[in-house]
Image 1 (cartoon, one colour):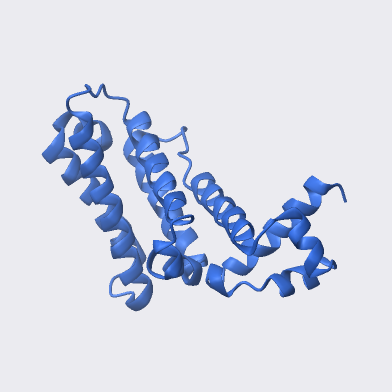
Image 2 (cartoon, helix red, strand yellow):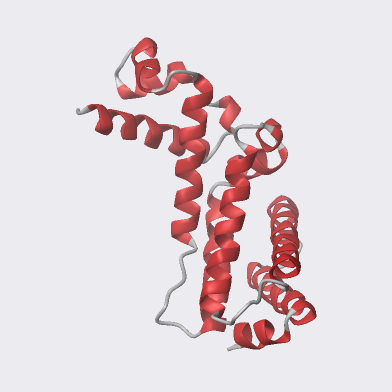
Amino acid sequence: MSPDERREQLIALGARMLGDRAIEDISVSEIAEKAGISRGLLFHYFPTKQDFQLAIVRHANAELLERVTPDRSLGVFEMLRDSIERYVEYVSENRTSYLALLRGPTSVSPDLAPLADQTRDAIIGIILTEASIPVDDAGRPRLTLAMRGWIAFVEETTLTWLHTEPVPRDDLIDLLVESLIAIAFSVDPALAAALRG
């Protein structure tokens, strides 16, 4: 394998393990064994375990963003619902790592926590791009704050749902969609109207 292919292989192995365990529980020795290399060689590609963890989390975040990328063949409302449905599907498949990334030691790591914030900002960007409404500079901070609040609501609600599943999945998705529209209405009725389609 080329160095880039080997590096990608190691990240992919780590990302697969992330599906059922927290990032801090991923063993470098186990990854090296699965890749058929020595532990020392893994550190040739990643100077520290922290660097390896960062690469895995970046990969997972990119995978999440790819999963929720809007299907532009749909109307805006259907696109929003479809993206949220795929988000719930992704976190259901990766519940252990999702919980660990949002609530475990990783969530307060000065190196890893900013990656989650970048993903949140990217999701806000996707929503505002697809809604395609003008946002003036004066209104942007308030709108961004409201959208970050909605994402916090989505994360907390989804975590609770994963733990107890008190309502059917479709009801969860409806709640997440309608909460965004309600928040959008309180900040910018034009945005709510655009999201409604």
